[in-house]
Image 1 (cartoon, rainbow, N blue to C red):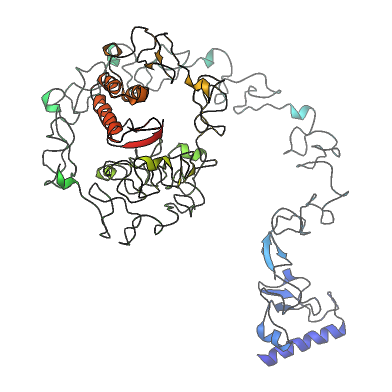
Image 2: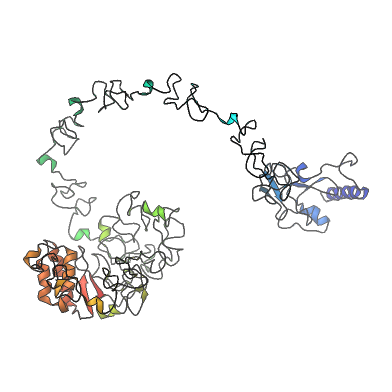
Amino acid sequence: MRHAVMAMWSLVGMLVISGCSWGDDCPGCECQSDTDCAQGQFCDPASHTCEDLCAPDSCADLGRECGDWPDGCGGEVHCGACPTGQVCNATTGQCELCADDDGDGYGEGEGCLGPDCDDRDADCQSGDCCPACEDADGDGCGEGSGCTGTDCDESDPTCCQGACCERCEDEDGDGFGEGPGCAGADCDEGDSGCNQGACCERCEDADGDGCGEGPGCAGPDCDEGDPSCCQGACCERCEDADGDSFGEGPGCAGTDCDEGDPTCWQGACCERCEDADGDGYGEGPGCSGPDCDEGDPACCEGACCARCEDTDGDGYGEGPGCLGTDCDEDVSSCHAGDCCSDCSDNDGDGFGMGPGCQGADCNDSDPLCHDGECCISCFDPDGDGYGYGEDCAGLDCTELDPLCYDGPCCEVCFDPDGDGYGDGPGCEGFDCNQSDPDCYIGQCCAACIDLDGDGHGVGTACDPDCDDEDPDCFAGECCPACIDWDGDGFGENCEAGDDCNDEDPDCWIGDCCGSCEDDDGDGYGRGSGCEGWDCDDSDPDCYTGACCGELGCDEILECILQCPELEETCMHDCRDMGAPGEQEKAEALIACILENECTDDMCVYVRCTSLVSDCLNVSR
């Protein structure tokens, strides 16, 4: 091999010494350029022979080394013969794409030396030689100062102006269609015998009964699949899958509760029970009650339901029997805190939940969507396919756990700081600060109310949080928009600050906030300047008591917060006005306030949800 290489370079030397040039006077010459050689070779400009791009042995004979890319043993960079449509990049020695019709190396693509203003002339790429006329069909007409005029048809080099432009788009050849050359419009381009007049007044009639759509029809057709029926009594049919005459439609004897059973359509037989495990518990009026586990006939309610799905045995996992959720079911020593993954990213797009993510992900089951309009179809931060939107599989009871969207797992406790207090029926109680395991209720909450555990919230000990329900959002674009009803720049989530009165653009803080919004003039209404809350601000004789009717939870809560000094009798008056079921929530609210000894500066109340035991500290 070494001798063969030396012989090759001897031949090269002879050719160089003899001054060979390309042409008939170059005996032994193989090539003029790289394109004349095979892939992996280049054309030596001195010997006009094809050489390997980088042959280690040959390079060693010359005292050279092969570089990081094929470079002809350290000399000029070569690519060899590049495929059609590609050119050699003299920097990298790689073939790159370049759309270059005239072969001058200029055109469109990353492999080109630059753009080409005239890809039909290899001697012209830019400057004065460039044509000043955009002319696709080469007839001299087009766009630009160098054209003889505009072109009405850039696909026809024989036509640019004049009579040839006045054509008629006429599919059936009857002279009628679209364009200045047509005799007129054509109502039917599929029929050369019809273009205008009476023949156009046809009837779209699939079953041929004369009824359908169009001016030529006798009228509309209620059933285009039946030529014997288009109007009248025959249209009043009954959609009846089981043939018992009950179903949907004007011809039915009534609705059918079970279209799979011809013996049952109404009455007691409809009150069945959906019971997969046969224990008598399930869904439906015929069940003894709901079933917490349809896969176990021995368990339907009670203590057996309070299970905990706990793979690593640390007591944390999924289910009401767990101490809390587990961020890592493979490590028993880790269930919350710093040991958890910095970024929970189910779809692998770098967005998700946690400080290690690039940002929050509105849909962690779609790697192509993390914010913007795509979130509208399905808002699903935990990536389980369940959330809010028409493209979701269904609603999600928690967007904090990708393994839970309905069922018993929804009954767990969201508890980031691991103190047993948090959000959910599995908690010992509600936690006003999810960042501090030593604080969940009482005066310590005044320092920082942090509901989502991101270290941001309301209070002197923490920075503000614009969204205290999302642990990945506390400032910036993720924040909810400013809600400012009176347009003064102050309101909920507004940069200017909160608004004590969002119905008055001249009042947002100070003495004006002590006013009373009192529509009926009885001294009761909304605001700290009122004698109390008004359940009916349109009637001056009614503001509390039986005349108020039955209030909802939100109204009861508003009533209680208007009680001077949170006086107990006043609060119980609010409770008594509540609708059935809401009174229980109000009672829990009042008990929570009294048990926690609310002061003038702080009150504790339960949120208006079915979770009546959840207490939350807020500024008065």
